[in-house]
Each structure stands twice: as structure tokens, then as C-alpha cells.
Amino acid sequence: MIRLVKYSDIDFAKYNDCLMNAAQYKCYAERTYLDITAKKKWDLLVYNDYDAVMPLPYIKKMGIKFIVNPKLCQQLGIFSNSDSLEINDQFLEFLEKKFRIWYYAFNDKNSFSRSLVQRKNFLIPKDLYANIYKRYSPKRKRKLRLDQEVAENALVIEDIDFSDAASFVKENMLGVDKQKDLTEFLRIFEEFHRIDSLKFYGFMYHSKLVNLIAVHLSGSSATLLGTFNDKNFVKLSGASVLIDQAIKNYAENRIFDFEGSEIPAVEEFFRGFRPQLHPYPVIQNSRKDLVINFFRN
Image 1: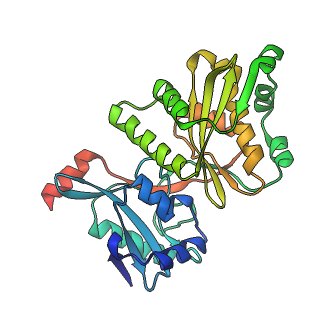
Image 2: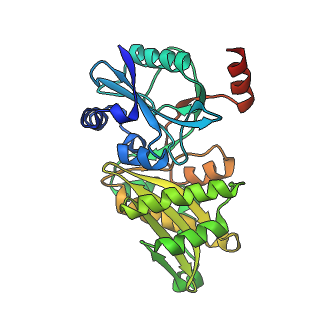
């Protein structure tokens, strides 16, 4: 039996136990991660006595609640000891019948009896760095062999101060149209950095910061939450160097998660590290469809 449990009534000990032993574990579903990204605005669908759980982050517009994954929270979905098509279908039916869904992303292990839209993600499973490096594309390996002048004047810094990182992100973040979105990304970065779960790697050239990556760390994963580049220095390949350094640091003990991309150029860049493709199912409705359905109902 599936029931809705409000945030204030969640048994977080049982929730954590279910998540940490789940076949589909994702750091995005950890309480701390969701509390920060969703600002504690999430409820929970529970199957029986926390045998399976499904976090439901939401926002409210004009007093109406909409289910939507928060920024930097790529995958949620159903978490249980073993993925069950039958139980997943029950959760999906409950979700679609009871809630207005703007955008909800399940995890890459969730399967359903009907097809859902798929989005791309890329992962490098735990392995020795030497083995991972061998699989890099020839082009990626060439990019990592810096020109002599660049190598002599470049420096990788593995823990950039947050204020310096935030300034660089503000100047070089692409794909964000609204100041509100940029503010929200920086809020999330700052809160993760404050609890020591986010590291900023910087590529310095002639003492100038020209590339930056943000890597979130959990017990079993290292997740690339952002790549930021000074467009005047893209040809130096600093972003490749930083990602390679992060993989070198973490991949032996953690899954390295690229967080995927639907942008062809970014996808091509990620594929150069030869990660595995792990698509995940999503439900998405336009604002127009949500409004039309609201008035119909």
C-alpha cells in the first residue's frame, strides 16, 4: 500500500535505512541533499513500512502545488531493496493520479511497464585510475598533454575558496537566463560547500583562474555539478585537466557522475572520458499543459 507522508511526519531513520540499502541509491535522495536543494519542501510516498520510498519535491505557484525536481537534483524516483516493475507501476499510477507534475525525474534503475521519455546521464564505475585513463578517447588524451608553455605556467588548485569560486561562476556561467536562477545555483553551492560536501577545482594560468569545476561528494559518488570556463582560454583544455584530476582523486572509491547533458557539444566533451551511458526516465509537462489541465479539472 502506498501513502503520502508529509515532510514533518517522515520517519527519517527508516527513510535513511531504505535509501542506503536501496538497489537504486542516488545521493540526490539523501535528506541533506534534498533539504538543501528543495529548501525542505518535499514530501514522501511510502510503500508499506518504508519498504520502498519516493521523494516528492514541490513548489507552489498561486497556492497550487506542483511536483518538480529542484535545481542540481538530477534523479529521484523509487528506492527499494530491489527494483520491482510492479511496485514502480503502482508508484507511477499514484503519482500521476494525485499530483500535478511539472518535471519529475526517476533514477536510472527504475523500470516501468510503459515507456517514458528518457534523458541521458554518464557514469564512470569505480575502477583504478590507470584503467579509466586507458579508455579515454585519443582526442581526450591529446587534450591532457598540455603545450609546454601552458604546462610551465599552469597550476591546478583542488580547493578553491568559495568567494573566489562564486565570483568566477557569476562571470562565466552559461545557459542561465535569469538572475534568480544564478542566485539559486550559488545558494546551493554555498550550502554544500559549508558542510564540506562540495569541492571547487580551479585551473590557474599565469596566476589567473580560467577554469572551474564543482564536484559534490557523497559516500559512494562524486558528482560533477558544474563546469565553468573563461571563454578566452577554452583552448588551453583546463576543463579536461580538472575533470581528469577529479577522476584520479575519486574514481577508485566512488562512482564518478557527469550528470549528463542534452547539449550535443557538452555530451561530446563528456564522452571523451569514455563514461557509460545510463539513461533515466522522466515525466515532463509544459506550463501551458498544466494550466489547461488545472482548469479542466
